[in-house]
Length: 146
Image (cartoon, rainbow, N blue to C red; front, side, top):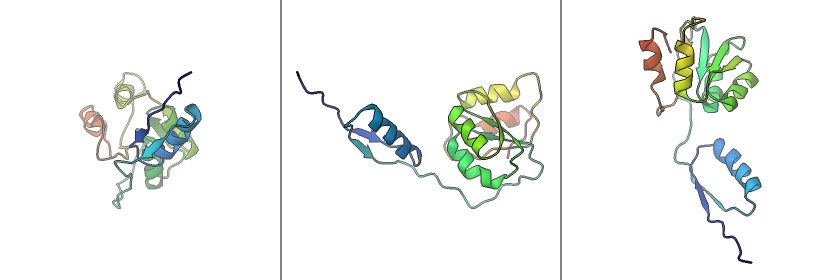
């Protein structure tokens, strides 16, 4: 019987996702060789946003929760989140979190759908690179985002 050769895998995710995914891969593919080479590093900027009067938070990633929660510590506040992992992180940080879809597009549709009106201002900690300019899209829909 021929031996199965597992090629090395290059993982470029930032921490802590790199460590988590590397461990998960090791369990799924015993003997997998992982080369860790993060392409970016997530770090919080020194600027503090104006959170006066913020009604809710929106989180599109676990990193958003990790770096944003200290900036808007209203733990009884509502948080609208993308995906189950981000929602769990927001709950763990003390927010009343709602999973509003799997993508930023889903979140936008949820927040702008007819029905219970979402009022701003909303607190949105985000990275430099995003898949959707959620701040602009929500602002265009009449919802203030900080």
